[in-house]
Length: 99
Length: 289
Image 1 (cartoon, rainbow over the protein chains, first blue to last red):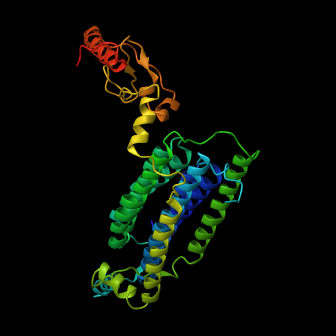
Image 2: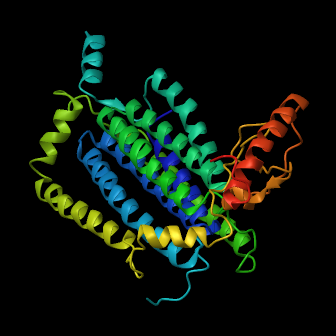
Image 3: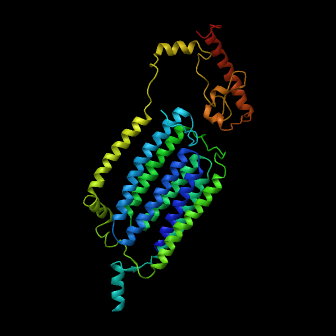
């Protein structure tokens, strides 16, 4: 095997995460699929960091993790507030863009 | 002599693209199928809690792959931040929203699932075909440098050196991002109080004017088992539906079979005691005073 197998694995996981975003209706599950996509990109970044022999890719993956943490906090708060007003966590139910 | 120069070249990281150690190959072929299977199960699983646990499996496998790729710091951060913090946040929100909020199986757009599968297959073919063709084209000409030189002082030291020199501005902007996220979460999750807080006197008055001046029976009280899904038994032996949480009721709860006779005897004894307590609450018998 060589390093490109990691890239193929990352591509496969990214596709599975994208399929999850397209297929699931529960907002929390959609969010988990987005996290899976971010993780697969991290794997690709780490692999490229090793291929180029510099640590920049790992620093990029670190920043992706930080941004993902911030994104999860805000996203789950949005899901909570939508659930509180509509008693539903389904992405189909939130179809009115109003206060 | 040529052997010595060859190993010297290998040590400085001039390995060919096709050369990774067998230990790493074993790690990859154990963890990669695990990650893919867990990811597929995450997308397909009906229960959101199962999906969260499968996602934990994917993240732990990826942490192992990071460790195999000379990124021990990221592997630790992956376990601590992703699996430890983010996924537990997911589970907290799942519990707050309610475990029973599973997906509806009704397709709102007709043919959306088939279309999503076709799009997914096409995307996977495109992405993996691009990678494979690039690798085949570059085979033998491009060499993987490896991180031995970059990790000479240690992986954490190397990352810190980059983070506090080249990426210092981005790192400091990150603090603004985190502050904004924390404030935003507080603002979004904040619940404005629309009615004034009721006093203890009002609460007591409302309680004694209701049908239940006494507390509702706890779930599983005097029942044959200790599950919270088991309803409490009333003094006449019937089950009290008030004692089971509304969320548990939505989850296709079935009434348990009656317990053994010894338990039934204990129930009839305690039921008599509870009946007299209920009478004293009603104020008809004064013997408990």
